[in-house]
Image (cartoon, rainbow, N blue to C red; front, side, top):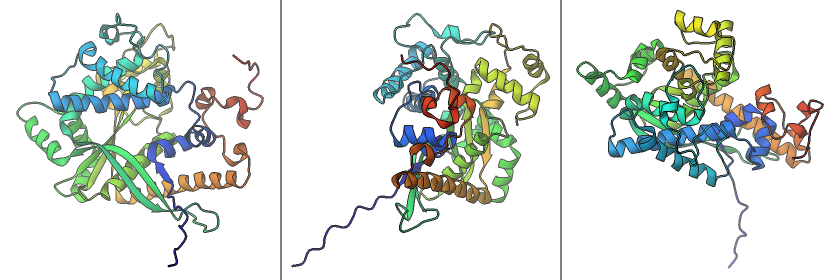
Length: 401
């Protein structure tokens, strides 16, 4: 009896929309060290808070679904236990909270009262944002969620496939989303007449592009995709602003591949930092307004408050609730022609990653195979700036701790 030899293992490369697409576009070289080289950052402020706020919102929804707690929730009784749970999960993965941005266990005397809106910045801004996110958006968002933490996965052809060099002729793209159902949205709209108004439904109804999608392309049943961002709303001319749209559009394509999916009408991105903006956030908001790089209307009072502010950290201009809400929610209508464009952008990123991997495998140095292109703020906080060609000559007084 002749036995055939075992065939070589066939591995399809996997790419996620956040861990790969957005990370690579932030900086190619940093992505290589952190994601492919598994070298964790020493001060993962953005990474930690993004994971933290995602986890807090997901666990808050599960708690609400099980216990049906009325809002507002008490920070020390209802929200603090969720924060501690997520903190422990992140610590087990080597992600520790940044100093002075989160209420650690050994500060029991710090209560939620210090986070009430006023003229001064918050001492523990991560906990403040978690509390605001739950109590501001939770009452309207949680009742509309039909499915949470849906895992998406799809297969696409490997761009510029070369049998001699490419690792595979396909690649896998994946992500995780929450979904709102049209049934719950419509049901909420119906109840609005008699009982209460759902702020999220109001934002959807006021959005002209969303109404056009419902009118022209969507059946009676549809879905809305939800994503949380632990960051401020980006400037309209920034690459990040475009990338978030690509992400939502790609999510919609992935969701439509699943059997139980309904047509996707829109995606909603929540920029949760906008509910409790930091001093740096306020300065950037002011720049966007001065330079006309924002898509959110601002009242005369809020505009005067920001423009008259000289950046003094001892004075924190108070923005209206409406302006903070408007900046924290972004509705992205799902249009078929734009979906194809977003998929091509994702293909392009995968092609760049695969090309860099192949170059490195062929003996090219890491610094030459992966480009170091990032904003200065990213470079300033990067652990690899001392060995990065982009910062060569900029590190004047490097000392070993």
